[in-house]
Image (cartoon, rainbow, N blue to C red; front, side, top):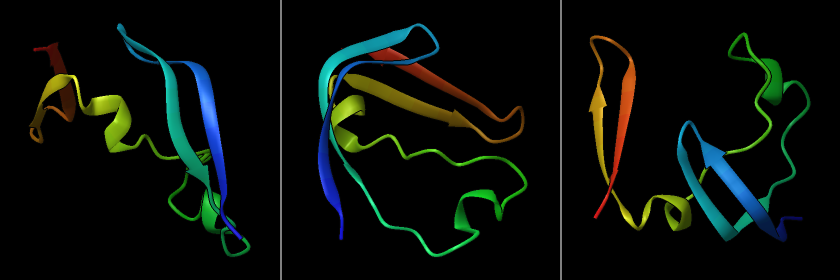
Length: 67
């Protein structure tokens, strides 16, 4: 089953938000390392909601700006 969680403080680079809701899913065995790195969670739209988001796929950079 999936568990609802609230993070008191969550940061992605310099972007920081408080009391962000999310879910802790039950993943199939081995899923969290299948991509070659440890996947501990996914950042939901609740975190990104106050930001303008841009992706630069050439430099693999994520840009966040409040507003």
